[in-house]
Structure formats: structure tokens, C-alpha cells
Amino acid sequence: MKRLMKSRKAVSPVIAVILLIAIAVAASVTVFAYTQGILGGVTQANLSMSNAQLLDSNTLTVTIQNVGGTSDTINTVVVTGESVTYVRNAITGELYDDDGDSGTDTGIVVAAGSSVTIEIDVSGSYESTETIVLTTDAGTTTATFEL
Image (tube, rainbow, N blue to C red; front, side, top):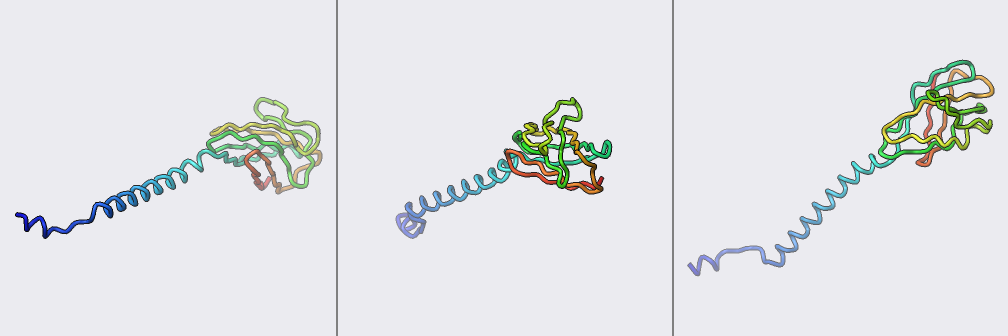
């Protein structure tokens, strides 16, 4: 029996501990990378614009949706090549900006998972294709619409 025990070969305890630590570190790095990939996208604001409709020659409604995980504030609404006279909530009529400075300082808050429909009035008239640029706390969102 003593011979049987001497002939067995095994990994030394030091190497076994090093292997276990390496496996644990690799597993934790994998879990960390996985959760950052999922949670990183969810915890940021992500605005998109859709449903642009021309009400008349100088008033346009646009729906802005936040599909991200945090709220975002729209600071400016700019229609490329046009002078914005006012921006307001198309549903409630709340006026966000009416000082004729291209929609600056609008302060429109779009909560996570919600949307807001705004009216954008310009001093001239809209062209057949218009580009709208939103500057927010999280960055810039741009969309081009065929009207």
C-alpha cells in the first residue's frame, strides 16, 4: 500500500493554488466585461427623432423618444438653414422657447423610456428636406426628414 501512494503523481499544492486563482480572476474579468456591456448601454440616455409632420408651411411636429436608461435634457433645437421662432410641447402647449434665438435654452427633459412631441416653428417656410439637430446633456442627435 505504501508503494501505491508513492507512485501517484499530482500537482503540487502551490501550482494548484495558482491555477485556482487564475481561473477565478479570468471568471471575474469575464463577468465584469459582460455586465459592463449590458449595463453600460442601458444607463445612458439615447434620443431618437421620428414622426416628423408638417402642420403648415412654417410649423413642424417631431416626436423625440429616449430609449436609454437615464433622462436627458434637450438644450437646443436647431433646424439647419432655418431660424426657429419657438419650440413648444405639441400635446400640452407648454412653451419651451420663444425668444427667436434658434431654439436655445429649451430645457426639454425627456425621461428614460418616454417620449415628447414638440412643435418647431420657423420664421420662413420648411423645405422638402430638413435636418434637425438636438444638443443635449448627453451629446448631439441629428435627424433628416423628408417633408
